[in-house]
Length: 258
Image (cartoon, rainbow, N blue to C red; front, top):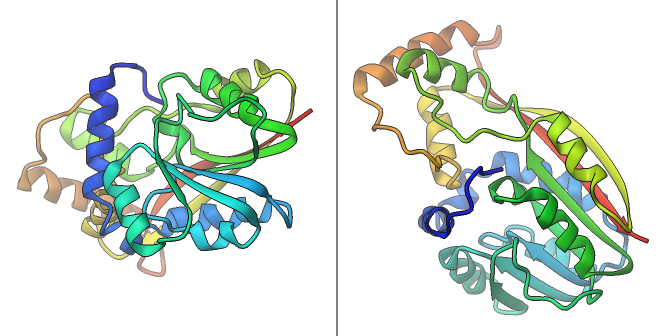
């Protein structure tokens, strides 16, 4: 969750993700794993379904199979253009997940895979999702939690003196957000996911490839010597089978409207 509501920051995020649109599917291992869990949380028939933060349409086919009407929504124009290129069928909407363009009680299902960590006001965003749902409608979401990007984030901080990623919400903060919601039944679980790599540069290429290397407070570019120092520090974390893991803490949230 970002701490600022400045529209300039949101536009930078959108531009960042737009640049990653064509490479996204080559680097989205985490997204695929989270998507599998979220899709299992959906009923057989999802009715009018919004894919919030749809990206280049990576889950479009899976969601269209159960939806009577599919709506792909994203703030990044480049992502939507890529999605439309891949999937001509469907309704595509460029909009901010914090300002959904839907009438109250008009949507059966909202699916948001790794989208809400970019919002500036999470309680407002979640309540807005609930308000858009029809009675008995359902929203399923995943989001990145505090403790993610280990051990890479810690190595970067020790080498550069800076935290080179956005601060993610912690469990206590998320619980407080969920308790503020009204008119909804809430279920929330948290899961640790470790994505394997051979090299630090592979991790960085994946983060850049999905647009997730955007930081609100931009720091100076990493020098070659700093990157080398990070690579050396990460070797202490190489597993017995020769793999470097990038660890993520992911919350899976289900909201069912009363």
